[in-house]
Length: 239
Image (tube, rainbow, N blue to C red; front, side, top):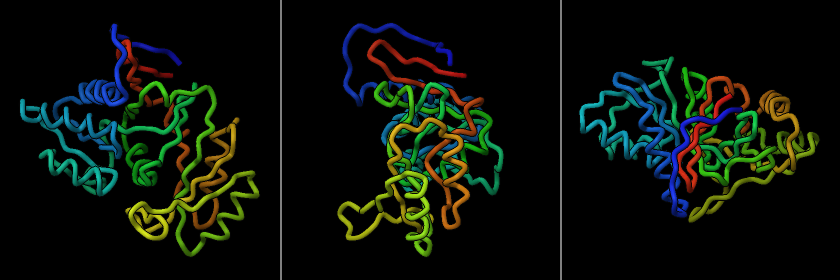
């Protein structure tokens, strides 16, 4: 992993300030005429905010949102939208992550949009991940979200336990019962401890009948650029 694009700074910044700087930095990587995947979450909100400003200045792009939240936000910002049906190959995708390791493997899915985010990441020529310093780690150890169809919930939970995981059904906030994804499914948050081989675990989880996708993103490292918001400026990490 190598780093580029470091900028100097003097003062400590808040978490939101770091997110804004990283989001704006990523928005600056969008070029005229691109079709861009638009991720879900608070950090990407800043990137979309800056993209909207650039559109007012003449930038021409189309966005593919990864969730209803991203779609609503983009429409409120007057960002033109399209779909993977119309553009199955994207120039760029901008998204966040819950954790990033030294190989640029990711854990994603805190916003329960992991399946659509993975579809957009796979379709993009380049994947830009926007995080603050707290998301960078030597080895992945955060809970791994798994999207599962309700019909297969119990067998999938047993299968995850057989792999050494501790699955917990994600519950809604200000809603009784489990979180329901944009695809109509449940999310299991699965703690595995330190994940020595995230690519293997991703494969095993993804092969379980009833699993739509998991929050491990290990297949895109060669096309991933991680933009890290830090107190001394933004930093790019690449393979």
